[in-house]
Image 1 (cartoon, one colour):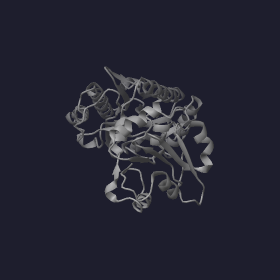
Image 2 (cartoon, rainbow, N blue to C red; image 1 turned 180 degrees about the vertical axis):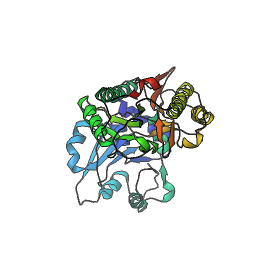
Image 3 (tube, helix red, strand yellow; image 1 turned 90 degrees about the vertical axis):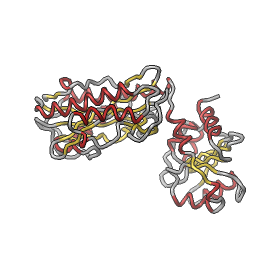
Image 4 (cartoon, rainbow, N blue to C red; image 1 turned 60 degrees about the vertical axis):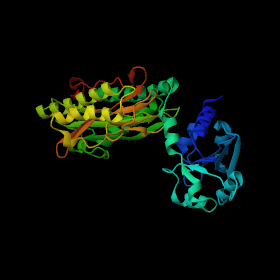
Length: 367
């Protein structure tokens, strides 16, 4: 049995519906091996829960991609101007006493209302938890692919460190990183890159602009790639330009120690809110708690932000196969911000994908 058929089988055994209809391109890729960006057109994977028969509905212009990659039984193409829901209802049946599982977090309202033309609200249920639970557990092959993605990301950052950053704008550094990432085999960036210097580094999700890197600045770089196998990476390092001030040292070391505490706590069987707490306590005890404004981490895989969520309210335990980030930060308006982010694979022992240095003496840049 192929990995994709195995995933389909696991999904239908975990849901209580007659038919599953998936519309998120990443989820469809996860269950079929076929990635299509449909833009405004309808893309759907239809799974009969009893027979496990799979049907892909897709824009006709993507026929060759489906032919080459999709591990599905039935192909159901629709042309521009054609009503794809007519084909959908012909495939799964109209007006029947049947339950349908959808991605409640993805299916847009207009398409939900199209389903409501044939099916009652009570018969349409979300399967988000079941899909997310499957995607949240990775195996050794996934681990190897994720390591490849991280390795490419870190190569580019080592190059930047050697190249030098003083006098360059945030945009120039971001463009340099993109070029290096693609030269090392990245298919694309997973986001950004987010390059923020000076006071801009206090913006957890700021935008890279025309601000130049100067002596005395923080330089926060948060970036990642999409690899040829469609796995993503996500890492953050914060550099200090020139000799740090005492306050810069205090802030940086607080984040560094919080990062280490979070990693130490991130082992299978530990509740996710405990991982968050262990890291947060370090920053609170350092007097900077009010400036740590987000969760400690999130899942990573084919998507940039997957389940699980390592936040203060999540009491679920880390499981073998989870891949998570640990990324504490301190963001002081008018002063600057520091974030350090590593990605971890939860196994018998926790594996840190990241090797790029993060001790304060290793991240000081003088050129």
